[in-house]
Image 1: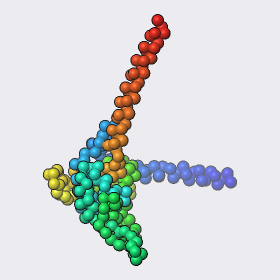
Image 2: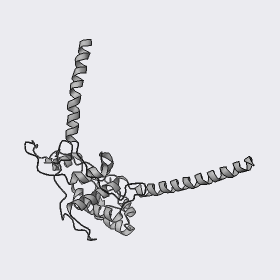
Image 3: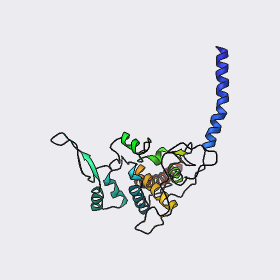
Length: 255
């Protein structure tokens, strides 16, 4: 039994360096970005997030869903109630059953969530070569590196290095773990034209859509930061008042 334990221990010890080397091999430096929503006082740039939604709508929504986002949430971005209704009216959702027990299609309402691009996971896989496009509702929170990871991932497509064996149907991406990703390169210069005339080179487009996806994951971030700041100010004020009251009370006792 002791010999077995010694052999097992030795095997684990020998395996550890290879695991560490593999992890280091896939470790990629992420170019840090300046995000308006970072920090205690951070908040979303609503114009940027609106541009990012345009990128998602025109490019990403063909494969990726946002299952936790309702149309009415767009009012938080400055869209009017009428604009939200008009936006929802561009989509159809499945509802029912009706009096005959059948499901039916209808125009979406502000209270509806954005519809999934595929009826089920099997259909999604069939349309994407067997790969299941992930829901993007929480993608910036679920990935280590957060928004910086998503931004860098979108711009990290390139030709594989010499000798790299790329599996059929996959694309080389220097940021994605294993460097092979099912999603083809999507972000390019001039991919969209913004109504506000903002730059639309690949770097700006990637940053805009990443900001939008982070807003989807953190829709109450602005309110939370605002509340946190008020709490800090109130706490500071009460601390100062308590200190002054203490000094006044002890001054009377000392005299």
